Image 1 (cartoon, rainbow, N blue to C red):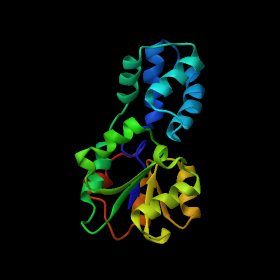
Image 2: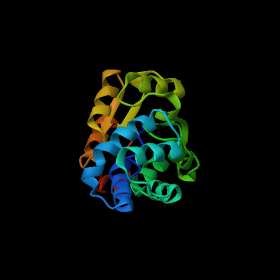
Image 3: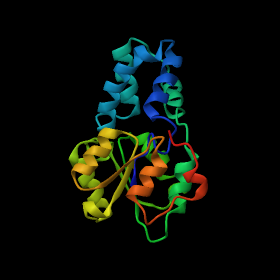
Amino acid sequence: MAFDWGGVFTVGTFDSSAVRALARLVGVEARALEPTYLALMAEFEAGACDLPGFHERFCAATGHRPDLEAFRSAFLGAVRERREAYELVDALPAGVRVGMLSNNVAELCDLVRSDPRLGRVSAFVFSNEIGVRKPDPAAYEALLAALDAEAGEVVFVDDNPANVAAARELGIVGVLLDAEFPRRWREAVPGIALPDALAGAYWG
């Protein structure tokens, strides 16, 4: 079993929350900032820079120069947790190996890896560490290698339809996390029932 992080363990994507937080910080509208942020974030997630480097690129691209520590606080503080996802991992049967494949950056990876609620996760695969982002097939191949598993043995949960489709192209069982997630889970993983509280939760 493997999971994305942003959009699965967070409510909404991390990027959408970070755009709003950084837009508030520099006093612009989020929709105006979003294209620039996403372009810079694609480089950041592929390991092109660290957070101070991301800050410098942000300043150069936007013409705004927020203090680095304020920038760091706004960026890292944008996480809005989805409690149900942590509960799902905790409820998985003991024999199920758990992995994570996420387009992510070093500072957030450190927070995720050290979270005691994710102690079940034995394989963390992050884009900034492998130099490639989902939906590139190489990202999923890195996950399979980390789990020492064949594609058909792995179920992968992601909130992005393109990432789920790419996983399926390789033979991985892809499950889209959206408002229909409990039904999608039942169909894809009939042998592992969602706890009642999670089956009745809103996952949109």
